[in-house]
Length: 278
Image 1 (cartoon, rainbow, N blue to C red):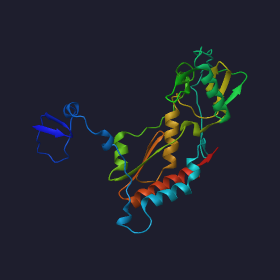
Image 2: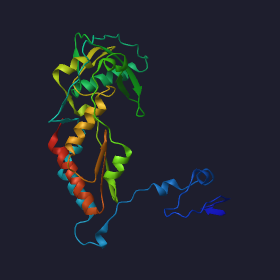
Image 3: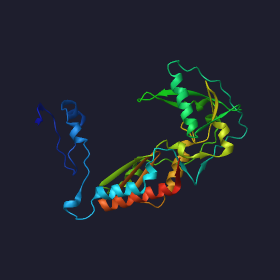
Image 4: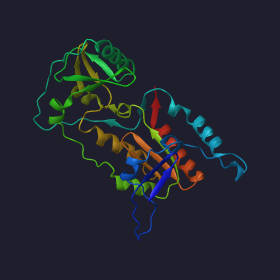
């Protein structure tokens, strides 16, 4: 058939099937047509004030964000009711690895990031340790670096990994079934919001050009970290509906504006009650 879209025109194949369902545009069409993605991806907030006099959805959302403003502060949060424990396999021996050379161009940024992590209480400098993991600096888009411990050669092989299932995509869809309004919450420095038990901190020591540093918080790269985090989040959200969380991403939905706002308020209430900021 001859297909026309905006200023484009081309011959494209199409298939008619007997089953019910929405019209689907496949890759063969997408390879030929350049869609107006900017318009398609444009998000518009709904305002139902012309249908329902009184407080609009946007006003309710603004009030909700003001009520739970502390949850959105640009500070590192701390879960009050949970601490992470690192458990090793029986007979495990300490692993101490030397610090790796960091490119000279990255050294100032690495040192700046180490100081930032210290100032936020994520890292503490130590004089010695039986355990030590080298770091790998990963450049970020904003020009800073992310410091990652190469734990695969030190703590991970000796770790008694936590066993807790991550949600499957089918579970997430089932939780959100019927939803028409959606909010997405991205939890800042997610793993760092869980403190480590005192005895576990020594296992997560990193070796850097500035010396040894010990993590006070859960960190990416540890085999057990995803399971520990997911279990914590599932405990916080237990009993809720229209809410799904996988690692640091949380989706809240509802079949209407009112239900969506009620579910969103419940999430913020629980996050506010179980964390402290700063």
